[in-house]
Image (cartoon, rainbow, N blue to C red; front, side):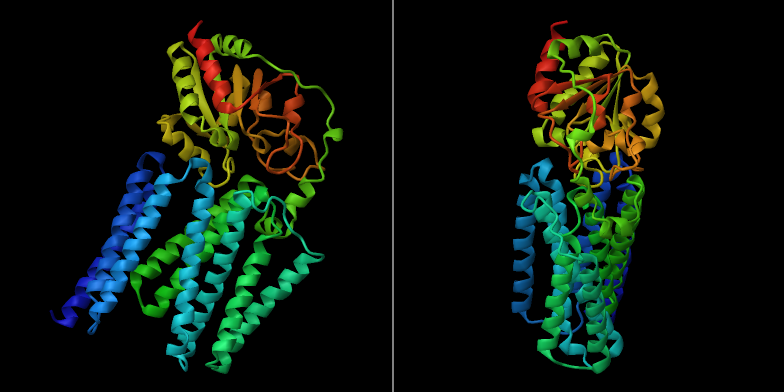
Amino acid sequence: MDIQILQYIKSIIYIIASVTFVVGLKMMSNPKSARKGNLYAAGGMTLAILATIFCHEGAVSPVIYVLIVAAIAIGTIIGWLTAKRVQMTKMPELVSMFNGMGGACAALIGLMEFHHNIGDAAKVSTIIAGMIIGSVSFSGSIVAYLKLNGSMKKPLRLPNYNVINTIMLIAVVVFGAWMVMSGTDSSVMLYALFAVALLYGIMFVVPIGGADMPVVISLLNSFTGLAAAFGGFLYDNKVMLTGGILVGSAGTLLTIVMCKAMNRSLFNVIFGAFGESAASGSADDVHGSIKDISTTDVAVLMNYSKKVVIVPGYGLAVAQAQHVIHELEMLLEERGVEVKYAIHPVAGRMPGHMNVLLAESNVDYGKLIEMEEINPEFEQTDVVLVVGANDVVNPAAKSDPSSPIYGMPILEVDRAKHIIVNKRSMNAGYAGIENLLFYNDKTNMFFGDAKKALTDLVAELKTM
């Protein structure tokens, strides 16, 4: 077929793919259409890949096609099996790892294309920028993955780490600018820049506390999108550019939303040492006593309520109790009790974690109420059941100026008539601080593994 016709076909397919990206992203903003939107975007990406392979300019050796198909097949199998087998509690780690792989691809593009474009300052600038950002995203995402799965439980902070990181950032930028302006063709310098960028990615994320990982994941996601966009500029590939811009802008907006949800600036997340200050909290600073409650008493309380609000947290995901809590919801509704779920923007280990978790158990999307909408309803709520959530319901965010989470918008469950908190123990949450809610006069602690405790509760309710 004529090369010009092939290019026309490829351009049309790229436009179609770009439209599916935009439409898919829009559909992902609503839980009801999110799955379909994901399939639309994936279909568009498949079209773009096929167009790139089969509408390529010039002759391509059959061996290259075999290698491409083999690589795609291997990646597809690994990705499919990983996604099918991953537990919901491990989803944040998987997202972080996938994001890191995107950054690694952008960095590898830079390493491969650098020597082919020496003398073209514009392209070399694009290559160096994409490689640096991709490298930072890759190594930073790996550290985020290790923090999320518990391999790095505490933030590691060197003395004056902010100064060290700032110097490293300046060094990376200056080094990259020198590579562009000098016109050097040195592989040693190229790989040295690659290594320094990787190191900066590690140093960038290592000091940040675990409670801020949702924000970090969003930020690194925007980095990966930006690196991919640079790749689109380099290859003059419109669909790659569109995809990168969408990912980068969506990640940036999500980062802003997450920071707003915690009432903290991005600068404070990166340089504020949140985890460190949080760890200084002590149970000795909390006054009051805790009250246990039995399964029977919880069942009676809920059975005679008019309105119950459930607050899901990471503990619910760890216990894999989403199906049991949906059964509890349906059982209560059969008895005329109004049931809703209160969703905090940063509940869990990643943005939207609780929404995805509850969707897995077929909870009606209309029952998932965001923080701003549900807070005014707590005063008219008979019982709030907090399952595995901690920092997002801690009244210290409103009442204790010395608390590291002071000013963070929370679910104001302390305004409800009765508060039931299900936890395994009195251990602090991800932010590492004591929760004043546990000592509230209206609070009763319902200790135990979430799945077992809720299963017992459902069984008790069925006997009434």
